Length: 293
Ligand SMILES: [Zn+2]
Image (cartoon, rainbow, N blue to C red):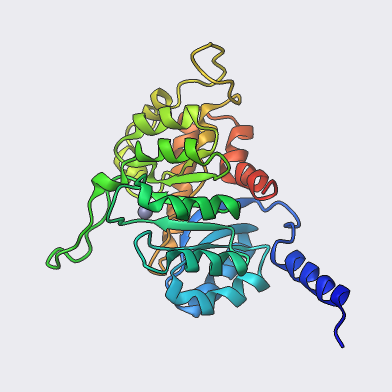
């Protein structure tokens, strides 16, 4: 006969396994790396992450859940699962439950919604994410159009960066990462980030290529470093710490990882961002968040 305390002990062990605290801080955390569904890619990725002592938020489509889950669980020091849900899928809440039960720590990249990101129809999804303390990575701004000949119900207007302001305020326990920093609405993005402590940005995508001759531009966006004023919340020493690293590797193209890393370094150096702030951007911030949830 299985006694009640044995069942409880088993559940506790299971919970510890699923949400066990991460061991040592890695040198780099990538908040935005897409799994392409090919297990061979995960092998290459793990080699890469071992070599640089990195940890990646692996964005997993529901159809690839079964191949990703065991690898993520076996390599908890290298991979953190994110469930790439679609806000309009009829079974989306079930998907959120399934990802959470498997130890996934976040949702996203969320893209291509039929309604605005902040539409009340999506409230139950955000409530569920907040209950589970899951982070949410939203695609923001311009988006690719991979098959121009096929009609598609997608619009950048429903993924504007300003739509995240209301979500951040309504769900203060959700940590939001706005991928691509609203490209090209950087100024709006930064201002929203300045007042919402639960919003961060990655600069993956075309932004750091577009701005490569003008990286000092970002100093005008992240302007409030060390500012003390009743008109600005008390922030850290560097406004640039609203950024986290994201590579947006997708389709198995690992080469983009190093290219994006180099662009981040060039931009941050060009803006004179301190080594301490850069350490937070490349991992410290997300490490603290992961260990506080
Ligand atoms: Zn994206």
